[in-house]
Image (cartoon, rainbow, N blue to C red; front, side, top):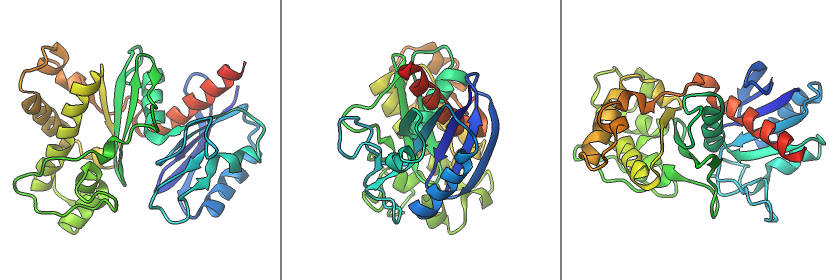
Length: 293
């Protein structure tokens, strides 16, 4: 069984081939350019791979309603050239195999629930904090979609008392993504996040915004695990800051040992590491293949 996987990010695409045990045999990555150039490289890669199915976890927003005339499209993204683009249809015209299609963060949540930090659990949240902020929701053993799909990166936030940054989101200004994404860090501090020292005030402010969203999501969705990935979360000093801020925000209201006593095991990095997104796409492809059988 050979399953193709596409982690389609706003900054880069990762394509790979794996199996039904979540093992990636090979992969390539390249920058996300215009749709024709980028998908041309995707098609060229898979032409020689003889995949039995292909899973796609895409940056969004995307249309995932199978009864919609624009199912498989990227919709209202500000990324040049990708708005209202038929991503899935372009690949379907090239490959006659089952396709799995979902957001990149839902895919990562699915991968973590299948093979990673949430394996064996019925629910988890996956946050990616990088070029944008996205949230994938896995609840009662399945991915959550609803009206469109979760777009928790754009929830509104209370402002940190020491932060006068206007925000970087082109749609909402100072939403979570506008205040806590990688580009927001860079615009606020005039350097890329990884260039800031671990004791810089930036990280306490970053944790302040992320912890608000996480506390709200815990109250709303009651996940059994919260997984934080993405480029910004490569800063390991963020995890203890976020955990403590979440506990302060919840203020003992939830009588759950996972939060009150074992929060280090509750809010965690991806069990699949940097491959969470690609393994999630692999899980989507595998699910599409099994559902066809």
